[in-house]
Length: 486
Image 1 (cartoon, rainbow, N blue to C red):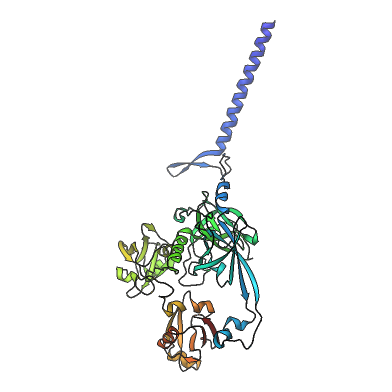
Image 2: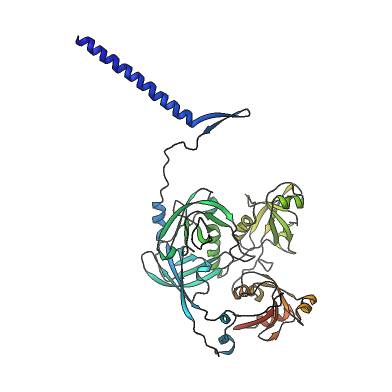
């Protein structure tokens, strides 16, 4: 009896095990059958999966990168004397007369941003817009020590500035390689938004070589790294780092209709930052290389208009006489498709690569000329058309002003009721654009001295020191006055 009972129990257990196994197998195949199917597209069998497939993936760990970074990011406070009258934006009587007959009270204003320590002896990189025009710069380290900083150099064309504090043995950040960044890669933004010290946010690289036209300068190099890491007011000048804690960019701007973060932020690639820092430390000025050509991005409209066989590269719309491009044999109508072995497909990509060079450096180009690819070696020059080192002392007056000039035409003079004038035909970073002058402005006098030719303007300003008062007329007839110091 006991033997039969045991046998029945064993049979029941065996049947239960078999049923359980079959149920598990059915469930497995039902699950995987829903998750993995083979779909025929033409003659090919393509494995397709539902987007809801559950897979165990290791989450990214930002702890080490954050710890490596926060001690190298500083809080920058800047202090300004606010203009008390609209007339202060044009000139100051003190510059011209030695006293102000109409004294107006100025009041202090404070702003803030971030910076990144790049060497143990106190060099800090930040944005130009964080420190420009500041009367005083205060730097607070992550350990709450505070220092006064001085400006080593500024570069409005890249929105970068190098400042220094008197300190030693500081924790500094290591440079990464922004060329190796890939869209979709995790990055961290570290800075001081809204005066909240040492704030770390995370996101991914959304795009590269993005031009957002924020610098407002024809010579500006805009090739931003776009991310969705949260960046707000006060983050400017802070660090964008990869998951290894290496600096890959300097945060500079956000895309926002509200003035606060709404989804996208932009950073200057570290490969540009590295070059600008080196120039400012060594020369006090950035050694800007130019290719001597005007370029346009190729799209379907331009390809149809110019008869291009492919929509790719950067189109050369014109070359400067005796410029680097012309001397190398490049021609209007050529399409640059590769620089130093890197394919380029936008103007910002091209300018970023050139922006990392100095005058005298050679770059290797591949261009599409009438459907045939041709290699060229271009020796880059500076804005003066040579490879000389540019220092503050060696800059000529037109470079300092940041303007291109031409005598106003007889038609313009007659229409505006003028006898003479010098027209501002182009602008880049310099005294003119900083003072508010815009292209098309016709200068009639400087310090009440008539300006009848470009030579009059250059000869007068070359020997001028101190305040300068410029008077002139815009094409719409509006008369304006501007002032700055030399």
